[in-house]
Length: 104
Image (cartoon, rainbow, N blue to C red; front, side, top):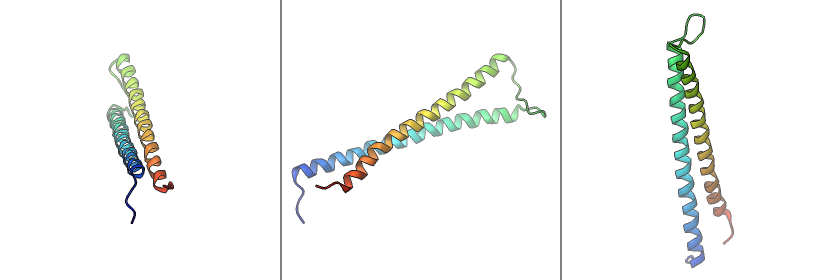
């Protein structure tokens, strides 16, 4: 077994860094996405508890209904950001995987 050359050693370190950065981004993105999911679940719970027999969600004021709609939009935005961050995390992981198959 030949010992690694200096360049191979540097390449291995870079590949490990790609794996680490990718994994951290992916896990963080999944966490952000889950936060958005929990926000949506709380909103759906409110809607379930305040729905009339006719299927209409009731609010105390118009402003409360607007705030509720904004919370839905915010939760969707948080989920989208989480998806984007996790997607960005996949790119360095793919780079790491490709480095496993590259010729030295």
